[in-house]
Length: 232
Image 1 (spheres, rainbow, N blue to C red):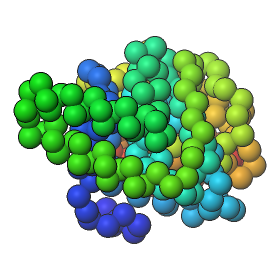
Image 2 (cartoon, one colour; image 1 turned 180 degrees about the vertical axis):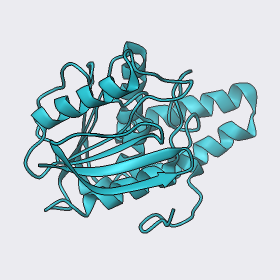
Image 3 (cartoon, rainbow, N blue to C red; image 1 turned 60 degrees about the horizontal axis):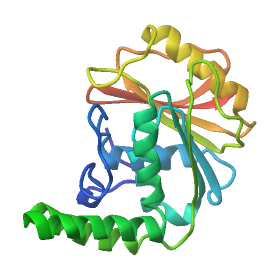
């Protein structure tokens, strides 16, 4: 795949488990790919700043937090939801890192780890936290909820819905992939505004068939496929 907006770079500061919190069974999503999908989807929006972004399958919130750091000045609000309370708890911690208070607390935690264990990885994480702090030039409102995206979603005005749906060994739908994906699309349609753009990443075996959404882009990346859609 050709990366149009996200250059090849070192994204280790945003690696899961370094500064961002990580819990078992959270699939790690490539930082560069997340940034590329966001930038491609943003081009279809009438406004490019003051954005509200929602992830209905947010897992531990790492992808939303990544966008909050990389595109801090463009985003006003980040909303995440997940069906698993443990994931919601992790997402709350990760989105709290987008505040000066939250990141300062994480830095102190990492410094304590280094004093106790003297690991180079902790020292590197402390440096990463310092670099991430410089990206926080704009306050972002955050909200995390427990919700089943196939049955109901929080009614929030959203500019961009961007999500990596369950697939593979680490995460799976409670129902079959096809019916659950269709149910999620129907729920997103109900809360979407006229200008809302939807970006969905999935396994290449999964397919989107919906008369309610117009496909704007589709591309395969390794084992993944992402589609960018607009509400009809």
